[in-house]
Length: 207
Length: 123
Length: 289
Image 1 (cartoon, one colour):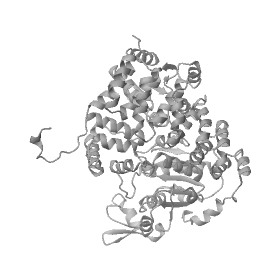
Image 2 (spheres, helix red, strand yellow):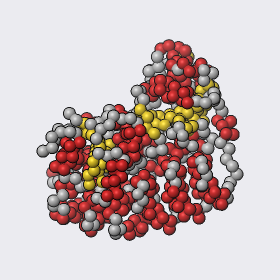
Image 3 (tube, chains in turn purple, yellow, cyan):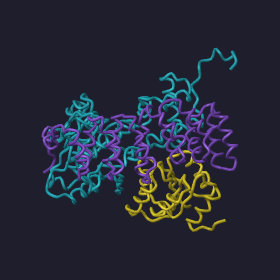
Image 4 (tube, one colour):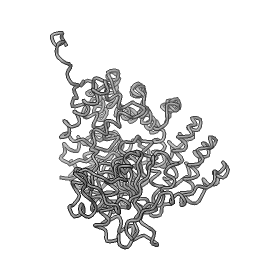
């Protein structure tokens, strides 16, 4: 009883890893009834660059959040831009949790996915365009402002523009002032747009 | 004074709703997503929740589900969405929301809903 | 500005009201820490310090760096400045009270068999936290006479681990330790306090880099994890990796405690929020695998 010191070395025995499994073994393990087993497989499969497509498919049917998180993490590490289009489908999913997880994953991707995202800015679904605006905002280069300005100049849907203005409140410079004023005129009867655009302008103007 | 929790990951939206509610005399607290909102509700339950659907880590539906599972005293919830389709509205009611608003919200609209949900006279 | 002012020293960068709000929103989003207007002076002072150190010249220039820097280094530096980093015995003691009054009773209630209760403290820093837990359990947990408890504490920095194992502390570090505990667990050496051997031997110190999954493989079957005031300094990806590592390291039903101003809301949705009278903590599902 009481405080007992347990050398961590002994613990290594408990967590002994199986020998390196091959691709087909890992594919089978991805369907394991146990979430821990699926997580482990999704982690190990990072060694197999061909796994991206399978992982995206697995993601769509995986109900355990902890497994989905590992799958997304592995996909990020695999970094296969061609498979990113599979993830785009998830943005249209009715499962809000899955949508939001995929949005979070996109936010962590590098600028290789920007071309795909820019294409999606013309997607017919305004919610998809809103997600893309959010994802673009988290890209870490100063082009962000010009993308957001383009959205408020070109998008027809009030909520897509509203999302862009919200983000402009943080990153806007003098270049955004005229587009913001034009947006205000375009949505003259929307109190939220007036509020948000005024806030963005105020933040630019107050040095 | 009635306490309202505004749950939305967009700072400007929270600010806008806060302005409307505070000028009508409500006490407003903000949360950035469903997890933060749950933590605040567990500390001290609110009289009304105004909840966005799409938020990182725990969305609006997840938050409502957790509120129920954690046995937080029941209070009305207004769910707020960017999309006017019936899918979201049905999901909102199925998740336990008491009412549903589509952004962008007008001040008078928000206040009517809030008063209605709180059982106050609607002007 | 006219040349009449050219002879005056350069003035300090100015943080306008809107600058403060912009920064406040950004920092709140990233860390969950909300600066009230009363903290204006505190925040401004540190922003000015960083503006000057980074040579960015203005708030606008500095904020651009903060917002867009790929490495996130400046944000980490700034977060360090904005948060209180001091370590001492019984820091955030309410969580140890929670451990003894709420967490351990629940773990014990669901326990099948008599395996030791395993606690992981990371980062160990110079050892104040794991040793605090050890003493607190000895002094305040009746269950200590019935259950084995293993405390493992890890850090990435071998020099602090060395100091932790040595167990020698300044008066400042032990200022909140009740006098009877000081007598029972420490020996005065000059102005310092040396932890006695039996308490030092109650904690296993290990070196670990939390972001290296190969290093954390052996960390399994924990019942409680204390990870206080570490993740707030991590970027998004590292936070997530850490959360997954903890998830794997935890038994079903295990608990994790973060620092006073930290929240899983900025880290992960893997864990259930649990409110106890003493604190809000997080739990891995009982049915989780």
